[in-house]
Length: 470
Ligand code: F0G
Image (cartoon, rainbow, N blue to C red):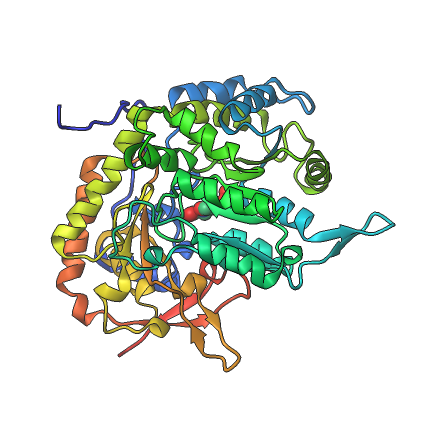
């Protein structure tokens, strides 16, 4: 059979609201052209993120009712611990309320000394943390702790149209040269993000993970994996890497994590959960430090900022995400939208990644330079024409200002259409493709934007924009 179908049927539905183009124009204006400021209710197809937006299964909902809310020693924690240990294999696991909480704990621990009075003293200045590409919250947590987040993705990973099976790989030569240049004492940890969200949801190969691990071992640098989309990455390894064709996704994931000293995870992605995450590691001392930090702000070690029911949903979700019929449907349905956009002429990052399509706004709107934010312009048009919400992953999200106050643009100007898991049907996706056809036909008249207000960290969430006249 050629048709790949959803390996589930729909039991409960949620209605979406249609609006007129005139209404959407008003909504856009009131939201200062920032998709994060648009009320969710006014969105028809929400492709802002695949995070926390999954449709949970009947079994997950059953787990929600069955969750044990004991403060200490909840049975839901033990189930969560059992499943996470099976897949990730680390000695210690700490639940947290979402991925960035894991990052905050990890980097506070890594980038602090504890003085004789037991106080945390930040020692982040002059420290560097390399990765393929850090996600924005990871980068923010590193920078908030005074260190520098360094992206060392392979060159192919920086060019949207270059085809490579593992565009999320770290450049191994650059990594080793970087360690030598900065000195091991200034690199307290090395990370890798699977799949590489910032670089287009691109997978990292097992060979690359193994080699990064070997380099880290050689220089005695702890190696952590940002595991948000570990199942999609594992499935890409199965599809694309020699020797893994016959392995199960579980076996591939287990091997991947066996090369690392720990991981951070947002269960809002590849665990089908609406909230949750964890931090896991082998080292006992570091774990005890993390636990102290956890208890100050997240909660006790057997719930860490989650309700028992959330841990139940995560445990069940992790069992479901490693199902290969699901992953096959997932990867193919994302590609389905990618193929349609390519047919229309819309330039996208290729090959298509796991959780999203990344439109290359720089190529789609060549008349709009990075300092006029072409990605933000595409985001606005998607909402104006179709009530579709997407997010810019370009100079709004990653741009910085030089000493002269001028924008230092991001490597790429992308617009991400993230596909929530098990949420939208094929006709929803056909509709998205049609809206793109319309935008493509008026693309030469689209104008850029300027920022009129912005915060210091993570500006894309709250910045306000104004359309430019020319
Ligand atoms: N790491 C990666 C690779 C992510 O994609 C995210 C979140 C995080 C860490 C942080 O996890 O949201 O649970 O705190 N990504 C979402 C996104 C927000 O839309 O891509 P979190």
